[in-house]
Length: 372
Ligand code: NAP
Image (cartoon, rainbow, N blue to C red; front, side, top):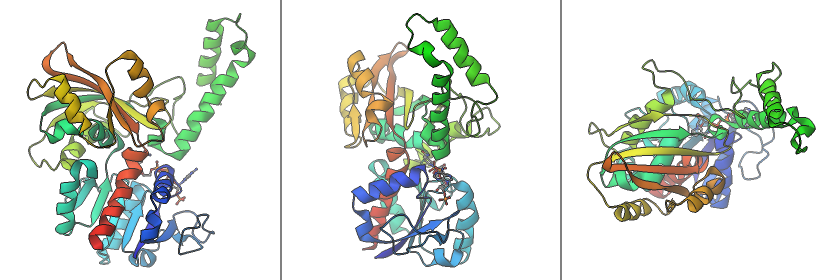
C-alpha cells in the first residue's frame, strides 16, 4: 500500500478530510503516517496510523519516504517544504489544500466532477502536484459547472457571502466568542419584552466597539457585521480572493488562452461553514430556463437545483440547509431585465467539503487506483 503522509490534519480542512476519509474507508487502502508542524513526538490521538507518535513535518528525510503527501497545513508550509523536497529528487505525489502551487505549470487544480479529463491526462503525462482549488471557485463550479462544460458562459460576475470557516479553525472560534459577547452585552433586556430595541442596539454597538471585544483573528467584529474584503490586496483594486475567480476557473476547465472573464466582489459574513454566492451570467445564447435546469442538474450528482420560489429558496438554498452535507444547491434561476441571455443564480455549498477537503480526498482515491 502506498505510504501516505498527512500534514495539517488537525486544522479546519484537515479534520474534515480525516472525517471523510474515515467514512469512505480510505485508510484501508493506504499506509498512513501523521506529521505535525507543532507537536512532533507527541502521541498520535488518531488510532489509524502506522506511527504512534507524530512525525516532524519539517523533517525532509521522513517526508521523502512517502509515496504521497497530503497537506492541509497552509501556503507557508508548502513554500518552505515542497521546493526542498522536490530539489532532493522526491518524485511522489503532492496533494495540497493551500493555494501557493495552484497556478504553477506543473500543477493541476483538482475538482474531478468538473475536470476529471484534465486530471487523467495529467496523471498519464506524469504530473505529480495536485492542488485543491479556491473554495469559492470550486463551489461555483459544483453549482454552475454544467453551463461551463457546455461552453454557454460568455462571462460571469459573482458576489460572495463567505463563511468564517474559510479563514480557519481559530477564526471560527473567534466568531462564536464574538457572538457570545454581543449576546452577553444586552443581559436581561433581551428577555424583557418591554425593553427598548434602541437600547439593545446601542449596547451591542458599544460592545463591538469596546477594547475588550475579541478581534485577534478577524481584526474587526464579524458578528453583527460583514467584511467586504477577503485575503490580501494585489494592487489593482481586486482582493486576492477575487483574482482567483477567473484564473482558477479557467485553469480547472483547462481552457488555456481561451479565457472566460469572471470577476466580482468577495465578502465575509458571519455564516459558520458554507459559502454562498449570487452570480450574474451572460450566456452566449438565449437558453430556455427548463434547459438550464436540466444542464445544471447534470453538473454532478451532488448538484441540486432549487426551484425559484420563496419557500424553497429560504429552506433549501441556505448555508444552514447544506452545511455538513455534500449537496451544492443552486437556485434563484431566472432571466434578468437586461435581456434573455442574462441569467441570475445563487449557489451555496459547504466550503469545508466540496470547497476544500472533498476534492483532495477524491484525488487521493484517483491516484491510488491509477497506481494500482
Ligand atoms: P487551520 O484551521 O488554521 O489549520 C492549519 C494548521 O494550524 C493545523 O493543521 C494546525 O497545525 C495549526 N493549528 C494552530 N492552531 C490550531 C487550532 N486551534 N486548531 C486546529 N489547528 C490549529 O487552517 P485551514 O483552514 O484548515 O486551512 C489550511 C489550508 O487550506 C490553508 O492553506 C488554506 O488556505 C487552505 N484552504 C482552506 C479552506 C478553508 O475552508 N478553510 C478552503 C480551501 C483551502 P499543527 O497541528 O501542525 O500545529
